[in-house]
Amino acid sequence: MTDTHDNLHRDWDAMHHDQPSMATDATRDTEVQAAWDRSVAAHEALAARPGVTFQADEEIVIVLHPGFDTLDAIGPHYFLSSMLGATIHLATTGEPGAPVVSAGGLPLTPTIALADVADAPTVLLVPGGDTSVLTNDPHAMTDIRRLGYAAQVVASVCTGAIALAAAGLLHGRRATSHWSVRHLLAGYGATPIDERVVVDGNVMTAAGVTAGMDLALRLVGRLRGDEYAQFLELGAEYAPEPPFGTGTPGKAGTELTALAQDFFATVEHGLRAPAT
Figure (cartoon, rainbow, N blue to C red):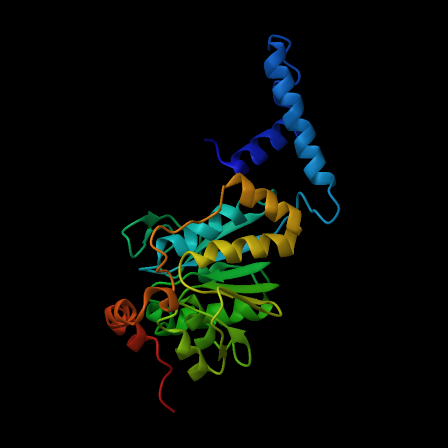
């Protein structure tokens, strides 16, 4: 099925630019014309909803670092790129133009170097993975700090919160992260909160991996209105029903949780705050 945001972008462009469209093509049959008319009316109805900003010009920066968790970036990207008029910058901490490979082996081509991102983006979002590659990179930390202080919204998914914390952006803030490293936030001056998404002023942090999609929808609601976000949630059929129900330590039980904690031990060790 065609993605909701593909329909939004394609149909809105066709309606508002001098392109051939089903609405003006006399050769189209009446059923196709009726479908087009319904789609046009739906676009206009959504745009007219109270509290909805249908089109804007947000500048959103997603930081790509080697070994980022694939869904941490792709999940939020799906919903954020659905905001008509928003620009998504995939900012690399490495060489411009060189693909950045996720922990799962997916290469993504960045659109800009992190150091070249202009000040004051609308959103700075740091995905997780082994973010020690960020915390151990002084240049990356400098850029994240610079952009974080200027951004309207600072966000993270999973262990991306540790990078924000190491940059000093979570000091005195309530925040969350992946359950296996959430406790480390305290070492950076943040208050760890066991919630899927935590909002503290202009800082939004998500728990592990899949929580990034929840954060993205909350962010869309903040920027474009709740009904816009609700529409995207419906269009994506985002209604998770995990088959095993072991997605949190409380649900997984002590034995499986202990095994997973040991599995993530090297990541947890690498993200600890430096001893003072």
